[in-house]
Length: 326
Image (cartoon, rainbow, N blue to C red; front, side, top):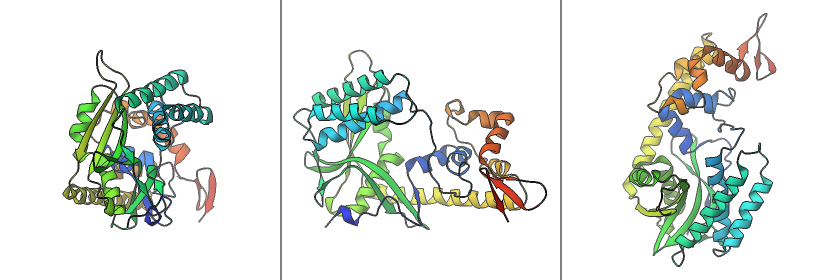
């Protein structure tokens, strides 16, 4: 019998947790991966998470709309509950003040309202496991490669028209829905959610992703919502695991090389450029690290702030502002 109690805690001591962003970033650009996941924490190569000091408007709309949808479903699809959850989340937000916060609130509430109207009479039913609703739940599963565990947050697990599905919300622009549907069977985030449900809740036989798209910028006459029921066959799950394992092996090879270059006397930042030298096909103009790549002055400032550097007159080295005597 499937139980949430059998699901490992998201904070897994001794294991290297990662999610879709971890793998996707390395595939897009290994150097960006290094700057994102390793360089800010040189003593802990698997310390994950790029800190973004300002929550941008597109991301904010998605974040607060997700919060509203979760509470909306947990309270029997009551729109007033979802709206209050959005208001409260905005009041509780402790990060730097977002630009256009009023627009974020209005757009999030509009999308919630449109969602309620779009799904009227055909709402998916939230699946309960061990007496608890599977809504905004972090799941973790062992990959079977070294000590890596894969983690992701499921927006919800639902039953819709007789099928158990992972319910995935996306706030997107009009043009992205078609590409999302087309790429879903190979999208690392979407397939990864099926991978988690397949291994952790096998009794539920989750074989579909119910993609729910809320359209932020709509062309004239276009619907504000769209949905697609996407079947993900089991063989794709094993291919997903094998592909992920190959990428993890590449990451491990690059990080070993980085250590070896450092031991040979190369400065950590330059060792990072050498070990993670391949760049992906993404447009670099959108990358938050483009100035570091293109301008050595910016690169040096970055290296001075984040990376360990040798000091003169002995074996002491400075790391993130603290001295280690070796």
